[in-house]
Structures are given as C-alpha cells and as structure tokens.
Length: 462
Ligand code: BES
Ligand code: MN
Ligand code: MN
Image (tube, rainbow, N blue to C red):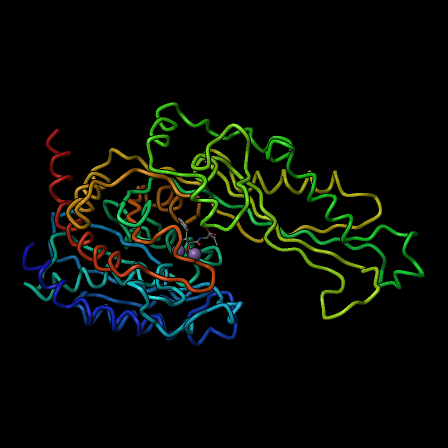
C-alpha cells in the first residue's frame, strides 16, 4: 500500500487537472439543451475508464440519459464491489451569484469550485483515480470492481431502476459502494448509514378563467394566490409538525441508542444558525436539529408562483397560482403512500372557490443500512487510514433513491462513503470540493479496496 499512497501523493496535481476536464462538461440532466453535453460526459468517462485499465467499459443508452458501465474482474474469488455514482449535475442558476464560472474548475482557499465538484463528479473521480493508482502499480486491484455511473440521479433515476432490474446478473456483487454524501464536518470523517426519501409534488390552482383587473373585480372572487397561501400555511402546526393526517403513521421512532449517539456528536445550534444566516432555527418541537435533519420527515415549499412578478406594479387579480412542495421521508414511510395522503389532504382543504390539479413529480424511498456489516467495518478502517482519524456514524438528510432498489433488486447493502462537506453548496451557486477531501478520498478508497477482503474473510470463517 505504501507504493500506492506514494503514487497518489505524487500525482495530486495531475489528478486535479483531470478532474477539471470532467467538470468542464455541463452535464445538466434536467435541461433538454444540455443533452449533447450529457452524451459527451458519458463518452468522456467511458474513455477515461478504458485508459485507467478497466477491462470492459460500455455505454448503455436508455430512454433517458446513458448509463456508463465498467468492470475489472481480475481477481476471481475475491469480493466484488459495485461502485455507483452519477455524472449528471444540477442547473447553475442564478449564474450571477457564482464567483467563478460554474464549468471552469477554479481553486480558491484549498477548495475546488465548480458545478459537480462534490455532487457527484468529484466523488466519482475519486474512485477512478484510486483504481488508476493500483493499476499503474502492478496492473491489478485487491478486489473485483463493477461500476455504474448514471446521468439521471438529479431527476429521479427513472431509467437506472429499469436498467438494474434488467441486468441483475451483470450487476451481481458483494456490496454497493457509493460516494455521494458528506462527511460530518471538515476533519471529521464519517460513515453514513441512513438517507431520507422524497415525495415531490406540484399543485396548481385556477380561480377566475382569466386574469382580472384587481380594482374592477377585487372583492368578488377568491385570489388563487391567497387561496394557495392559506392552504400551504395550514400544512404545519404551531409545533412545526406536518398536519397531513396519517403522515407520521409509519415513522420509525428514533431509538434511545441513536438519540444518545447523536447527542455525543460535536454540534452547536448557534454556530449552525449563524453559518446559515438565519436569525433562529425552526423545526419540529421535541427533536434536536440533528434528529430533525436525519431521522424526522419534513415538508417544504420549494417554489411558488403566480400573478405579476415583473418590474414595477401591475394591479391584477391573477387567474392561476402554483407551488412545488416536497416531503423528505424517513423509514418506514413509503413515497407513494405519502403522495396519496398529500393529494387527499390538499383536495380536502382546497376552498370551493378554486379548481386544483396535482402532479406527482417524483419520489424515492428512505434507506437505512446496517452498520455492523463487513463493508462498513472496512470503511471505518479505511477512513481511519485515509484521514488519520476514527470516523463517526451518521445519517444524512438527502436522498439517493437507488439505494433501496439495490437492496430490493440485487439484495445488496450500500456502504455510503462520502467525501463531501455539509456546507459545500451542492445544488447552489459556488459548489466546491475541499481538496484535502479529494486526495483523502482517493487514499481512503484505495484503503477500502485493500481492506475489504480481510473483513469479508473474517465473516466467512465464523
Ligand atoms: N448527493 C445527493 C444526495 C445527498 C445530499 C445525500 C446530501 C446526502 C447529503 C444527490 O445528488 C441528490 O441531490 N439527491 C436528490 C434526490 C432526488 C432528486 C430524487 C435530493 O436529495 O434532493
Ligand atoms: Mn449526488
Ligand atoms: Mn444532488
């Protein structure tokens, strides 16, 4: 391993330059205009995988964006890791808030700034460089590796689910390894064992059949923006709880053991509030901030629109109003069930004065993975070696819907080995990846590949 770690060290600046090339491709999955960039990004990754010595690499087209598959199965009898990541990124607007261009990787203060730097191209690249470091030093890996890098994670992984279902044999492995989450904090590595799910809805209200003069008609009809606001305002009670009937029915209570472990984590609400620029924190009464973030469900309004929002004033009583609302889910809530409860409740509280339509935009199931598996134990050992510090166990508030499908379709648990930071601006302007985490991530991944066979063997002996 010494040789590998040394090789990583002496190639750091080249690795960084190569990552910048990947980050320069604007592979935004949600925008039709960027479809050619999506294709180009998949091709670029496939080329790169061939160059670092993977034995088979193939781009699988889908009805949506292509999936890059690659494998190296040179050590039969050793464990096989299925590495998952995504090459698609979120849109970059508002562009004027970026300090440097989003698709030009720029180093400032030890961080590499670019869209996708952390979510998830940078973290995918960590594995490519870790693989390369072995291949360039003996032409072999300590484990077999299969890899899928998809282009639709940020839009719900619709076609990946079909792909996984159709290719169970191709994807057979001992465990899934995912680097698409965050460490607890800078200098505090962690293994993640839980993710929230998601149910994403849109609601549209129509009041009068056309926009009206607010003087001639105001006072005679219910403004749909007002009606929508009244509905949304009812969705939380004074304790910050979601008011949708049965919303909490299948929420798994947080065990005493988990609560105790959360309490021991280094956390400061005041500092957290200051970092976010809020005057005070808000959330469900009776739970700590960490509990609310990781182990309790929420409902958020992501956007609301209608009427006149241009420059100056226009006295209009609008015909329509809409909002996008999403709910983060925890075990054992089910996305479909929650979507139904939401729809039923919105229909019930909608005033007679408006017509409503609802759209279920997408969803994903919450996940919790075992923390005593050989994979997690290997990850703990690898993080300790890669970052020189024992990692914490944590959950995270975000969602990676495919994690549950890997379990259901392939029977595989995922090891969530994330190298991002909670404040790295993912999905927002000025996304970055801390460079220490980039290099530490490459070292840690290398240690993980190297350690895993030891932990798998130990289990088999018992
Ligand atoms: N990498 C994130 C998920 C994530 C974020 C995990 C923060 C842990 C901490 C992923 O790319 C993502 O953004 N997922 C979406 C899922 C969705 C579009 C179905 C999310 O969480 O909003
Ligand atoms: Mn991601
Ligand atoms: Mn994301």
